[in-house]
Image (cartoon, rainbow, N blue to C red; front, side, top):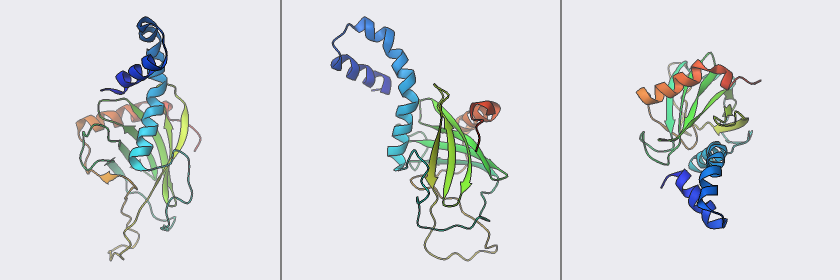
Length: 189
């Protein structure tokens, strides 16, 4: 059952009014709640906080740790296309992030952000209301020491997300939409 159908069932059983009233007015609620429900489902799927949280991880990172320029795909499920799973695709360039959070067969919300210590600090724009809100995703590390040729190498691991490798055509199309319309996510960082 789709989220819209579920909401319609809940609203129609909770409020004793005609189906005509619901069919005319429910679409407004569906658009308004779409971004809100998407955000809540993303929080539940990733056990993340929709608010900035400076103590999100006990691990410490130096400010010199940067995210390598490139395109990234992460998901709350270990494979793409899983219904009910939350995904994020983003491009990193000069320590600036721009991308989208989405669920399969649903809308997506664009975001921009940067790495802030132990987390990714994002500003997400609700695709329906254009409201911008802060969101933080904790960075995680492996507790075992890693020998690397360059100690400044930083492996990006996000709390509650699997690294899904190279994005496919549909994920790149979503990313392109967010990159083509930066005014959607232009806010003061």
